[in-house]
Image (cartoon, rainbow over all chains, first blue to last red; front, side, top):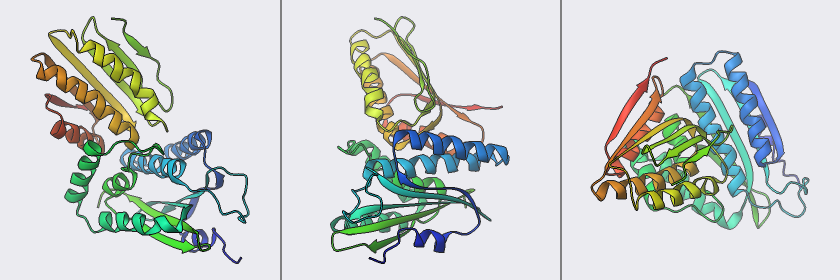
Amino acid sequence: MSFNVESYFSDAAIGSPILYYKGNIDSDLINKVLDTVEGKLIKVKEHSKLRKKVYNVLVESLQNLYHHVDKVPPDFEDRISERFGILSINKVEKGYKIMTGNFIRTGDVARLEEKIRKINSSSHEEITELYKFILNHQRISSKGGGGLGLVDMARKTGNKLDYLFKEYDDDNSFFYLNVLVSEKN
Amino acid sequence: MEPIIIEGTPKTPTIKFDASQGVFEIKGRSIPENSVEFYKPLVDWLDLYKEAPLGKTVVNIKLEYFNTSSSKCILDVFKKLESIHKAKHDVEVNWYYEEDDEDMLEAGEDYESIIRVPFKMIEIVE
């Protein structure tokens, strides 16, 4: 198996790294990442508006991983992590890039891709309406997600959700999500 | 009715729901992984309060951050307040946001457009 889950991260990583993590995503890890990144952004005196957007998108990114990652394939290098994910945050010229990666059943790829395409082809007003519709009509799923995370990221950043699916084997794929958080366009 | 007072944590807000004053406050950060677990007791408490509410109920929301799973729970809280308002009792929501936080203002406006209760948007100037 020549599949390297990190290769996309090194290819897509531009700017200066703020944080990189690979492994189990649990509640404690989420706390630590949020604390660390918030601390770093305060230290460099990042404008509070951008700092809050980064924090918000980071919360949704991490909790998307927490609620939605699928189990790793049986032959994967990391067999210990219950919820395996990768996260990186890079400072770029326009703001911050938040990238995540996680396994997804290949059978679920089409549905997720459809959702992202719909978000990416919507205007800001349409995204706001979509957000309110889901908020008001969809219940919290058994996985604990509200179905709003991706919509919220697109709404708060005003940017398209950059993504990629890579097939790991017949049953498993790896999902990369790459979001630019910038001052509103 | 016993008030609900919950100290805030890095992931959950400070809660002060005082039935004797009719003043309810949610303040701080609301970003727990399991928001239903946190908010269910509040929604249940409001179910009891709405049986015999005060003539006027004031709700102060002073959130710095909230995640999308909390957003649904906060809507559940507002829906209880809406039913109190429907039963001809005064209910007022004060939605506080920091001066440069357009996202928090927009979030308040989302609720204002869904819930039939008067909202006041209050900018906090530092």
